[in-house]
Structures are given as structure tokens and as C-alpha cells.
Image (cartoon, rainbow, N blue to C red; front, side, top):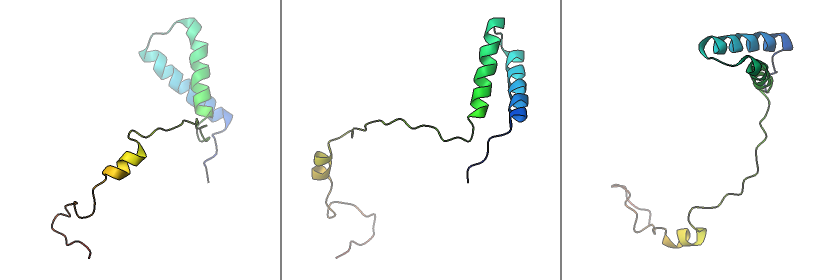
Length: 86
């Protein structure tokens, strides 16, 4: 069962803690503070939710036909001292 998202007051408290720690160590322009707060809050609100997976067409590095054709036969494989099956 997925964990439930933290309630809004906890998100606000975590957001303020994270933003304050970031601003202490990094210089940001005053007009960028609102965007930073929004970004951190959105990231915390999205925790525990399933991410949307993008449909990406995968292409094999080597064509499958040539891979199967060039695969070693069982007689050619070194089993490291173990006997082969009859």
C-alpha cells in the first residue's frame, strides 16, 4: 500500500525548512524566492505519487537476428570445469 502524502501543514513546514537552509548557503535574487518556494513545495507534494512513465520506443543495440545467429553453441561454452549435460 503506498504511503499517504503528508498533510499540508507538514508540507509547509518542510518547505520553509528546506528553502531557509538553501538560502543560507546560496545567493538568490529576491524575485527568485517565490519560484524556489513553489518548486520545493510542488516537489514535496508530489512525493509518494506514481510518476508518469514516458513511452519510449526501445531499439536493440544489435539486431536480434544476428545476435541469435552469432550466439555460441552449448558445445563452445566453457563451463569452468563443470561437466556438460548429455
